[in-house]
Length: 387
Ligand code: SF4
Image (cartoon, rainbow, N blue to C red; front, top):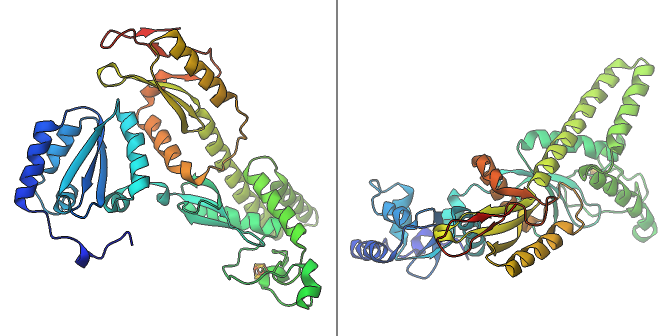
């Protein structure tokens, strides 16, 4: 079990051990970008961190004045520190993310702001899948759309989408009985489902109100809407609203107008999200410590390949080939992001939000093969910019 009961944890690190760890950092650690790991007595990695200056950061842990400070709490449980150098702060962030995913250190899990803080629309599995709004995206086998801010607003929009398409939203884990399974289950088609079935907001897959295929078609419409490929649900509501208006049913028309707005709001959020993701596609050259520059091929907010900045024509050609492969591959524009890539997408978008000037070092994938990639003729010599 990953989470240990406090009672089973080893006693706090002794002052002697802390002094040994501090001496080790002072004697061996360099002030350059890197990641560090704090290990407990039983080998558990309790914390992973990163810094532009690892030595300075690590020594700051030993200066914590109050026992409740984060650094002091981590040190109380750590008996060993190790570190790894990387070329830049950007590289350190990427490696830190990988290590946190690998070790799930309890101090990181408690403190880190990650995908769990965002809302996602999840498509559940099993017969009659449904759309639900969840915090975080942890189920690798499920389909997620997002991340989004404002779970409440997204939930309201998803409710409208479910109503328009007749998708189920019940929390009950009840067995589904499709109409084409009637003989099998000896059900009458009108066995009461719930009020949503009675008011025609749900196709009623639990009570034989639709066939499995009919339900799957509606779900496909929902996915097409979330992918931005089909406006059917919005058009259906608009037609209904206009018809109500023509019949002088103004109250109903007003209610439909509000529903329409919520769906349009969802569509708008998806458009903004897709646009945001698509703009995070470029080659990014990052100056590194001691001339160790790197070129990252980033597509749709995820690092697809990384190379040392080229020093020879052969190395440049290798990056060009990789670029053609990464950016030339057909990929659908969608707000659906693979679960295991969501944290990286959040990390990269937050990096360029915090440091917009870094966009100056990027070259759109559509530009010439070399763009603004730098060649470094030899270590420590000034970089020569190509193009
Ligand atoms: S009709 Fe059945 S499947 Fe639909 S929401 Fe109600 S209980 Fe769920």
